Amino acid sequence: MNRDQIATIVERRRKRGLALLAPDSSIELLAARLHSSKDNRSLLDEMKAEADHFGQTPDPELTYDLFRLYGDTGERLAYEKIYFERRKRLNAFVIMALLEPQHSGYEMAAWNIVWSICNEFTWCLPAHYNEGAVRPDIDLFAAETAFALSEVKALLGERMPALLKAKLTDEVERRIFLPFLEQGPYGWETADHNWSAVCAGSIGAAALHLMDDSARLSAVLERVLGSLACYLSGFGEDGACAEGYLYWQYGFGYYVYFAELLKTATSGEIDLFAANKVKEIALFQQKCFTSGSMVVNFSDSPASSGIFMGLSCCLHKEYEEVAVPDASLRASYAADHCGRWAPAIRNLLWTQEEWLTSSGDKAMWPSESYYLPDVRWLLSRNVKEDGAVYSFAAKGGHNDEPHNHNDLGHFMVHADGQAYLADLGSGKYTAHYFGPERYTLWCNGSQGHSVPIIDDHYQKSGVTYRSEVVEAASGDDMDKLILELSSAYEDTGLERLERSFSWNKEALPRLVLTDTFLFGMNDNRSSERAVTERFITLLSPTQDREGRILIEGKRKLSLTYDPSVWTPVVTARSDIDHFGVERFWHTLDFHATAVKAKPLIGTFVFQFES
Image (cartoon, rainbow, N blue to C red; front, side, top):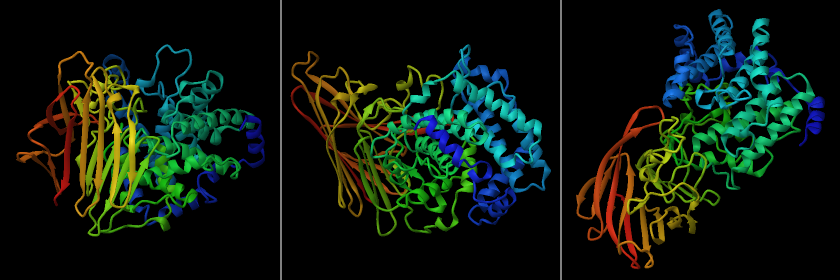
């Protein structure tokens, strides 16, 4: 859709103000409705507690010392902790000023933090700031800040002092709209991952709220729609998010926030929910949870996550097949460490009480199995009559995915919300994390995944290092995935590495993993090759007897193997997680020797025994 078509629709149909966010005819009626919501009560209590906590101390400053820390050392967390606290303060003070206008302290705190954010040196994070660049940077957080401020004005503009309204509008214009329109395009505009959705969606949302001129607004929206098309191109028709659930919630969330604003602003004439691919992406959430809040956390994704109920309700409104998750899985207000405005306010505004249910002692997710052919993931969740939930997931793909880990053939096994074979997820984000040293880090390189090691060689990164799917099937009694993985490695002499998973959904499920290694005769290296089968677990494995390892959590998982071929070694390890906290886990290695031209077959049976 070009800008002339957009301009015609905008001029004929455009809605603005509170009507874009809520059906209420006034802010007072909106506040009364939110106060009367039983299901929002706990969320409102959390917001009020945070506002009252922050109100006891002055707004923290973003000092030069903190800003230069990233450039000097690659350290991100010190600056980001203060930056995100300031956004959390914005959210809490503005929402409480909206809900409790009789308490003038909330309103004054809101005006102060708006003023302070408007005066920040940059709205970008230091990790995304390019000193000496010929144009102002617009990163994820600069765009999000513009989105947030524009909606603060939409909600509280009638009460906001004129000077502050003018300052807010001028800063969004100077930092976002002018560079976007006059100094673009930006690299993220053609990205096929979360940056295009978050940056473009946020800029489009801010423009819908703040821009008066239809022609100028249409110029912005034309570019935004192009970026969102690029974002969607990063998904296959299966709708799976290769970046992991956290980035589905983030990137697709911002796609939805903007899409809903645009649909409302144009009285439905521009509908970004109409494409079938968008529907399939919307369904990804209910496919990737294993039990309760635990997720299939391939890539840079945490192992568990709360759910944005506002986002879920919006998607259910668009597509009845999208499930509104169990009410107990709601993300707490404090769960978003970045303090993002858009999901925070929409968790209040979009949550529909009549759609929320609580399962009590029943399983929160049904038995389902999926093979997702575009990302080459097999996902299986099996719920028993007694409420026990067993889950298995394995992946193929290639080693150049967004937020890539070198993890072809990696898998995980969960039971009742506990990981027995695990994915470490994301580590602490630093300059090194996204630089040349990325795959030396345990959580990113194949050394930190449940995949083979060949003569001390790990998998390599790049799109040419990929898997081939030999067979994929899901059924009522068994799910199966067979991958050919020799292309994931370089300079190993492998002719074939076939990894076969058979997930048997018995009363106590059983996973049979069979790897077949074949090294070519024409390789000039030694006739004997060292092979290590590595498994990652957060629990402590113990040798029960020869040929049998136990991994015990709430349940007992046994691992049997051929001790005449494989020698087990358990090693306790640790690294630093995404939030800068040390985490502890184990590698469970099985060592064997392969001979050229003779297949080495390893069969490992993981059996739940309780």
